[in-house]
Length: 545
Image (cartoon, rainbow, N blue to C red; front, side, top):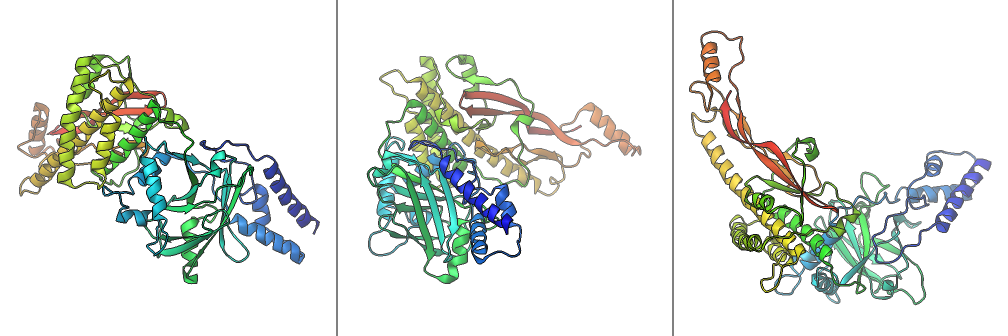
């Protein structure tokens, strides 16, 4: 009896400590979630002890307290997941691309944002307004406010409750829009969810959730004047009781009830200054990531991720104002495949700075190639029918890397234009290689050629934090080395004759790569851009050795 009283008091003490040490965070900034324990936060050692023990002789009020406490722990949020540098920029892109060329919401946008097609006032108008804000000066018309704490709980009636603790911010006096971002792919039958809260305006709003829904938009109630802190509690229900388990699976991790499957953030119009050159470069790189992921051939090899730093490499060379013209020309003329890497990404990556100081002649060459290669890539996109948004993203990349003709081009614009030339070269090379491998595969299916030593396609997975591509076609050599030997040397000819003479205890000539091509890696981090060359990565020619 005494032990339970002590434990209950201990839990209440933890709650009081959590309230007293809550961090003071200014609005509109990237927040790091507090890691101290809370009743609806991460499970502490005391939580585990209480919820894993059965104590005899409990009073009814003690049983009810511990049951309620443990019930909340099963739906506690996980620690904040690692965010890729482009996490928010990707959300802005989804908002921006929700409206088509006709200035109307696209059909896929209703599903993507969980908008129910019903008569009356539709959240589609909110999405349309956010789309316009996200398109203004690289999204500078919107400010993101991150909650300091998030939890999904189940109340006494079995209703899911989303709890948000918001930082004090004068922006909340405006009309915020709550955006719920699903972290994992959704499964199960479609569900219409109803969200009810005094913090919403109107107080009750609906969303139609399916397997293709990634976001939910809810319009918030502006905070009262003088209210220093916002605590939102939003009930989540479904009109069909049979769908209640599906609803819980959507908002919590079905494998682990200790994690939630959403990340909430508030979008507020206003409160920002025009984008700086560095943030434009950051937006350019995020757009480049989306473009390459959509346009490049998506082969999915069944192999573990290979870390690029495990490969032998030349010393990295900085891509900046001090880069020699010979180095830049060589990089632009190189035919080696290139990948763009975020291996050193961190929260500081949004301050990525990049500049080049190109000579007038080289700057003109970059401008000419950008136009010429850009036209080729646009034609390729049409021929291959890849990505419904590829052409629009291509245009946006060109806008972000535009080189003025009547005045000196800023170093940041030169930097972005040069990277875009290199990226578009990578796209063309990838499809050229794909055509060549199709020809090779067709030749190997010809009778009499299938078993002959030759080049075969082999795609491997690269480490996950890459702008693109995240795979590499390194090829391999397979086939027999019987007479007449393919692309051979004298040693292999004599070895083969020796074996055919009856000396079977020797190693027979093998089909192996005899010529390679390097892989170039452009590593982008908060310190700038660096080029490293990984030699002898891609097999280009086979022979019997």
